[in-house]
Image 1 (tube, rainbow, N blue to C red):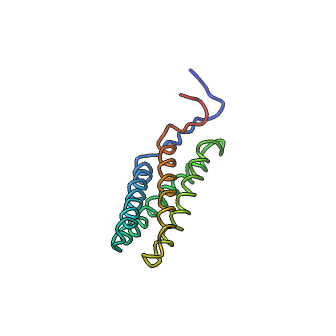
Image 2: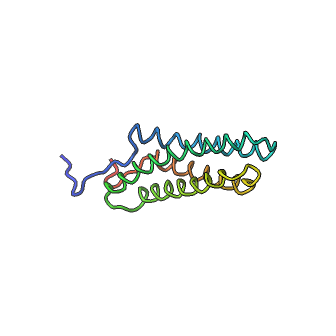
Image 3: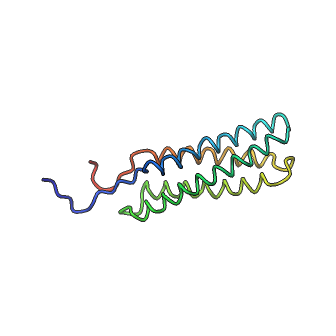
Length: 142
């Protein structure tokens, strides 16, 4: 019988949290690809696609951020990888929101800032998903 002096907390996302988290990457990636298509063709519909994809990604990322916040509150100690994961998701959502505001402008005015923001947000979403879906444990390595 092994007794621990502190409880082991599993902070790996549950199925719903993982689905919401994993849904942010293809939506932000789709927005990035749409921005690249708009940058190369200047057909306004690509900018519209990006706007809708960013809006969907923000919904998914927002709910994943809520789950990450609850997991952070439950984690002991509230530092390390759970905190980094939460802060990455928060930065992803904030920059994604700024990107959505950038894409709300006239299509011609979205370039190049919209494209640059889409690259940054997509990279942040990938890193946050990688950390979020990896084995985040505090306490004993059981």
